[in-house]
Image (cartoon, rainbow, N blue to C red; front, side):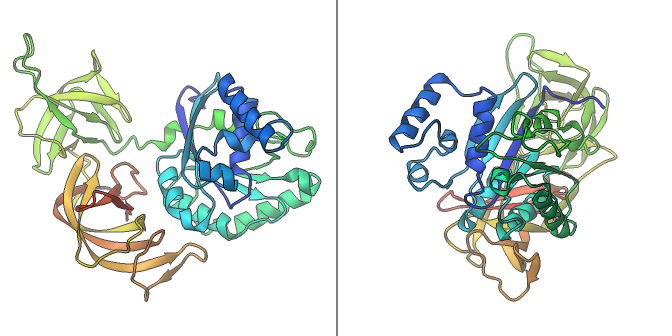
Length: 418
């Protein structure tokens, strides 16, 4: 199998407070030589002021002043780095219970989740919570890093015991690919370089796993979905009759000559041309941004979707969503929200809270219907017009929504269509 090492890989970190997430990312950036000299000098200077010998690795990611003072991660910190084999975007998410919503937003676009477990404590409540959220968000790959192995004398028995604990509860979740690595973020064992202290571990260091992770097959290539973002009418010499539909392909493959349907109208046509930038191409696929023209003159606008004639999403005004409530204010009954789904924006109301999920026990609570910040619940939504829907399990792009408060314009919830 050919590994697409030139692809961008997005990964999120997850784990409890003080598991060493920020230190791990700092070590990853430091040992892979992905830190600018001025940034390194600033962190070295700050480390000296705190009385720390060498470099406080966590300071490369803990950017907020409050975080640096408290030594914890509050916000989602995004970091970009590159190696000769791949480009990466890291979402360093908070470990505290009250920041579950940040974990959801940071992980929503991730190809992989790096779950940290303190070797001294093993699998704890937060490990289960974050793994459950990773499963809910359909993150294809999970790398379990058992950190602080230096504090348990690099014990193989401790490592194997934690694998057993993790597999006992994760077997109940829908997780496709799990890998386990024993590490010491502080000392650099098995992060970028192989550890000399754990010769019993035959696997690869964490960076090698990330560099060689096969992510092409994670993209849905079967269900062709092209949400139209804008209509192109150049009105310049040579393009007087040009009418192109521009957007980013959410999933699937499109070829010139394909028979397509335009939703929600249901009109059929064929693809006349596809442009990717200045070049005209015969084929385009997710996640390319392209402009298409059709053989027939159809009224198409932003929010419509071009799909294959024989493979169409569900059109519905009422549907169920697994929702994470992100706002400080609780859900208000009969409140109207703006719902954002691909390039489509409609009005929506929450008809019913079916149940809330206890992310610690994975049990459903049918009694408590009040949604507060960080709550995850299954709800019934009703929209003003039909949306073109896929389940989130089948298609992360066309299966996700956000709700926006119409009065404050705040994003109040993120949801996954069931």
